[in-house]
Image (cartoon, rainbow, N blue to C red; front, top):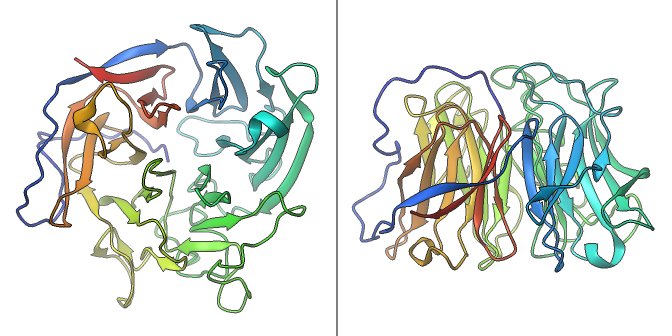
Length: 382
């Protein structure tokens, strides 16, 4: 996810994406960022509660979740699990890395966390519940661990959790770390590392495997694995209108990539790492059938991709259907969209001076940017 900032030389004029000439019109409006709230420590999620309270959950990597409501941060944290989460160092990729609210959150109070455990930095996927007497405070003793995954190294932990349109929980896990995937986890679907997992966390404890998962029988891969061949899928998201899936995968030392999965596509896709870095050969013999990214950029334009969302709001109609994403090191924000001829185009939307740790999307489809240094900002028309 978050790697040491490097000096990047060159003008940001676009991305190294190979496309033919197309007919897609670029967005016409100018955009700016409007501060929503600042003062957090390493924010990595900004999630609106699916109710009429206007609450947002702000997730800090150190292990604290706050509530932002009516322009203020509530004095009492929603949850503090710093005693369970890996103690962070500078540029640490461990910690509390993801949160997802159950689709029936307003009824059952369930939410799910992805964090690295303090004693050994293993990945923990756990369910928590809102306390019985205060909807603004979670019960720290309600933790129920669904899944524990050993991490061989300290980096490439992934982190994203998201409920898909099918109601299942999708989990992003990196390849286990170090450089170049020395354990070859990316091309081994029998391990949970380097994959997007897909589970049903409700039907039975700790979870069940959806019947249409590609390796449901456990013969050719782990039953939980839905897609593999990923290095570090720090952030992925579903288009709330089309249900398409976008996966931003952080690259090794040359390329960053965006992968696309059209709604209705069966699981089992192989995104190529560590045979490929983005669409470029990286190591070993090339393989057939790998799914190549729909966009990529080289390290003259950034060093760590941060996946975003497809814009579906009302304040910027010319951005409707455009996927927005950025780079942590450069603070650049780009758009991506498939044109009428079926080819993908991507270009610069605007520059920032932020360390973009994440994007967020509210219930109305508007999009926000999280600055790792503490601020949350909404993209608005200039």
